[in-house]
Image (cartoon, rainbow, N blue to C red; front, side, top):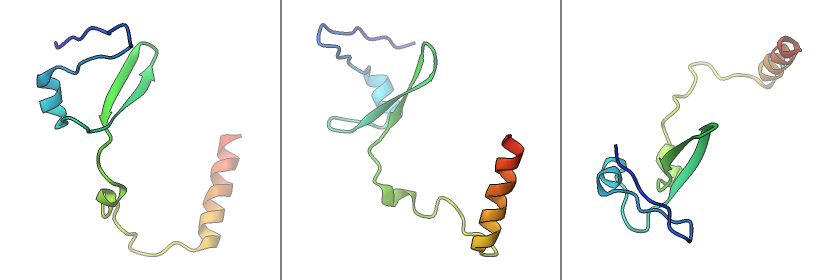
Length: 80
């Protein structure tokens, strides 16, 4: 387990092995996400939005606006 100490300015150094595992280096951005009380995840935030293109496949059949509205109404009814 890698550890780090918080400085008086609230800064930490990410250990070299963790930087290598994340694939980050100087100037890269990371995000801190609280997943539960006392647990934080560190996420790499350096990819541009365009890198997400193609990650979700297009539906075989396009969904109509009426079908979307019906699905929303149905889920709202279930939530109550």
